[in-house]
Amino acid sequence: MKDTMISSLLDDKVITRLKEIFGADRVMTGKTDMITYSYDASFETQLHPREPEVAVIALSTEEVSECVKLANEYQIPVYPRGAATGQTGGAVSTKGGIMIDLSKMNRIVEIDYKNMQAIIEPGVVQNDLNEALKPYGLRFPPDPGSANMCTIGGMVANNSSGLRAVKYGVTRHYVLGMEVVLPTGEVIVTGGAKSKALKSVSGYDLAHLLIGSEGTLGIMTRLRLKLLPLPVTRGIVLCSFEQLEQAGEAVNAVFSSGLQPSAIEIMDFNCTKAVKMMKPEIDLPLDCEAVLVFEVDGAKEEVTSQVNRLKKVVEPYTNFLRFSDEPDECEQLWQARKLVGASVGLLKPGGFRVYGGEDICVPISRLPETLRAIHNIAEKYGIVCGIYGHVGDGNMHTGPVINRNNELEMTNVQKMIDDIHELAIEMEGTTTAEHGVGLVRAKYMDLEHGAAMDVMRAIKKTLDPNNILNPGKMALPN
Picture 1 (cartoon, rainbow, N blue to C red):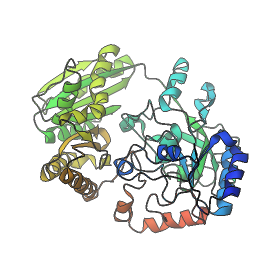
Picture 2 (picture 1 turned 45 degrees about the horizontal axis):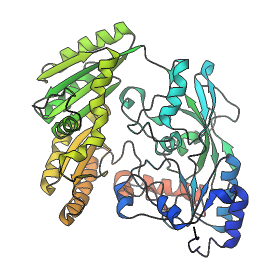
Picture 3 (picture 1 turned 180 degrees about the vertical axis):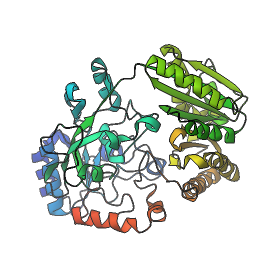
């Protein structure tokens, strides 16, 4: 395919040097390739794709380092990219430049089961790692809904979480160290250059500065991850509630009782309706405003004890309760929750699911009013919307469904997304608890963080004075 026009920054000399670093077959400038790299899973990039000027496929730390050195020399922007499952525009170009595709750096370098850790490259898909760990009786606990697609490098870059974060925490809790290419092209190792310890308080915690920085401070090329044993068994309690508020109150009551479920998931009436439309054979109560799915895990006796206590706590709030500790039945009950994201679009004929305003997080105490407020916002703009997510830690996903050919709905859904983000801050929460900031939530960063944003910008300027790494993301300089 004929190459597209190259900007003055990306002249023939730069392209020649990129081909020397990566080989000609892994340097792409064709129009079709640039379109492929112009979007991720976000609504924003579907509306406004952003093409880089060249894309390269990296296979090693050395290649990434040489590429970044070249980019820094010529002050060319560089955008690290994994599987592009992100929903914030974090892995797209803002000003042309070089897209560096890390998805082929996907080796599991070592499973050190004796020391409960693994060393991997950033392109390893989350579920692939956990499948490799099963024979050792181990797992990497963070469990996003996109586990079959997302790369762990992307999870670390965004500090992702998922279904079981309520008990096991988020990605940062499982990163022991990393190999990183800095904006100068220099390569460092955090957490101890040769360490295999499970903890350290030596020196600045550089890894945790880089985790969640969304590729703006460095490009991770190798990760050392903490692992945990697989739980012996798990139990599922599914219950329904006549009112949304009762579901929020039940979550508060569970934590007040001292129980610690491994997961608490919510599906509102629109979500249960959508799941039944997709798979009518799934047994879900429909005469309710919300369904909660509780998971407890551990030893068999521990699970039985927790389930019995949990039942007693939620009974005053629920009008339906079902329990199972049989693996196949547990998986069937979980299937309903796993299908929500794919099924919500069925709520409206010809409907399009918008990923926006959809991973806010609020304090547990404010769950009841937040759940109702989101539905009131949707009604205000005439948008069909489902609510689901990880309410065990206050994290909710909203699923607006629109007709993309309806100009009023396209306008109103953007207003709805703004209102939901502002609601999260009003409720003393955050605009994002899972998917990161990227382009989509950059405009809320100053409102959410205040003077702390000045410190973040100072750190960015210190480490990346030429502003070449993922510029324009997280409300950092463009």
